[in-house]
Image (cartoon, rainbow, N blue to C red; front, side, top):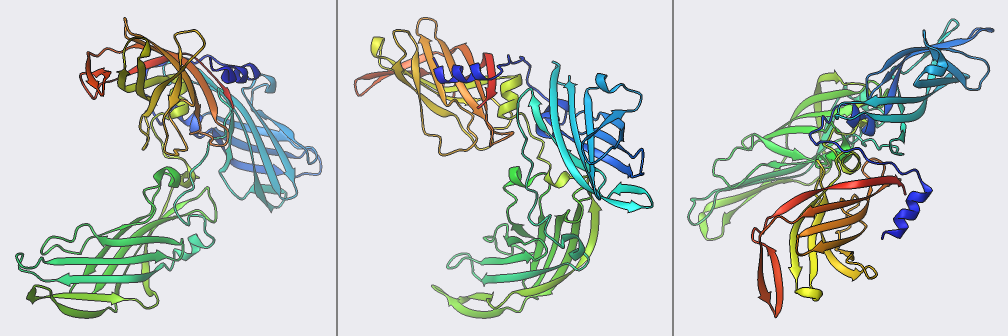
Length: 499
């Protein structure tokens, strides 16, 4: 079974998965080692003497908070090994080197560490490098960016280069930081509707809409009332939204916009917070600004059809954009490089598959009877963060040789790019004991979409439900008496490797 998968494992190092109880700390060492294996290089200095040139810096592992002060003897423009003060280089779990060329330096880090926050000890190895410009004062060169972020690639327990978030719109746009001193917006596509009514022959109704654009970031928000079908409902609080619903791509910080509209004076007010790290990604800021402007609306009124005593007034502005000048309220510093850090989440596909692999079964059914019976069920990997993914249908396919195993026919997945179900599997079902055994291979792309990690394992479980049967179109169909019955099954003998 699964011959192609076994050939894959023969060509790569297969590793047995450690069992572990769910309930993780998503901000702990293990989670961060998988999602942000990286280091901060702080206080980097290069003493460019004619002889005996040297460099020094402090290193912080962002996953486990390991710190070290390192010194390096620099000879020529090649790589020069650095050592931790008081520690022999050969005995270290962290290896670092520096390369200095002209007025720039590149730091290379390779480190192995262990995390014990999940009840088991899991070893990680990662490597990464990054460069930084140097500024000179006398004979001392200092990194212009501190801390410097060195993003890592995991070498073990899996090979992956974790993806980072894109960050909120325009955070790295040139001029983002400097433009915060004089904030402004453009307003376009304005519509205000005000309809009177007695509640019987006509319904009182108010609505408002406009597009608000921040030229500094390019962020566009659509503003409207939360609801507009209540008599006397104030438009003093508007709901404004842009791309905030893509939080998994944006990261932990999202642009927020609060707005209001005065129906009597046509005065529009806004308070918005956005983010900038265009000058130095290590020193991001949250910018908050406010502004108000009276909108030059043109209004027309007409009688409400069927209720001539009531009027429907429509006010619009359809010319070029209105400029709304604002005032800076605050510039709040944020943790270094945090704008593009991924959002901390419960265990996804990779971590779940490594530490607590389980299948979640539902919609179990037996169609037919005896030798002609066929099994089907819904299946999804049990993770802490499914997102919008739902179980997929698995049907009984052709028999595997002369055995009691059957190939899986996996239903359509709707084009989901990060599936939580097998791409290949087979199963057998013992009717007498209700034991369902599944041998499956699945791929995890949540850490590194370009380099999926392939898993294979076997689960065995008992369908602990009372099955009830009925005949439909002459075919017996048996299913749990509880239509919502589901169960999980631990996956054993899990092995994995690169695709």
